[in-house]
Image (cartoon, rainbow, N blue to C red; front, side):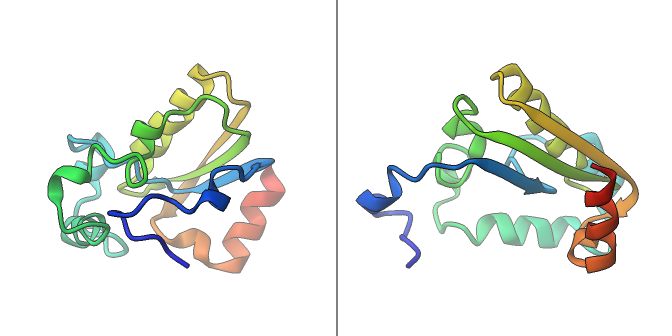
Length: 138
């Protein structure tokens, strides 16, 4: 069951132990555009207007987007996260957000393996052959 943002998380969610984290093209909901967002704003897989639609779909209160830890991972903090494998694509509008995420994880002493895949665009890791090839590189 999904918990609405205006309700606290269920008690059973408080003590979930993660052993590892696999993040694919993470969005960090930055309050400013990144270089990759500007360069790839007309990307056919994630054009700017569609990316904004997905972000705003999380809540009807715009002010929550950047300040609620359940929506914005930057507000939740990185300390205590498990070993993380993070994939980004060099032609993805979210590339720089992934690079920032990897940096913040390393700064928080989280064991991190960040792989930026050449010629990979947003959504490309949905294709089984691409994800298999990428995982073999790890």
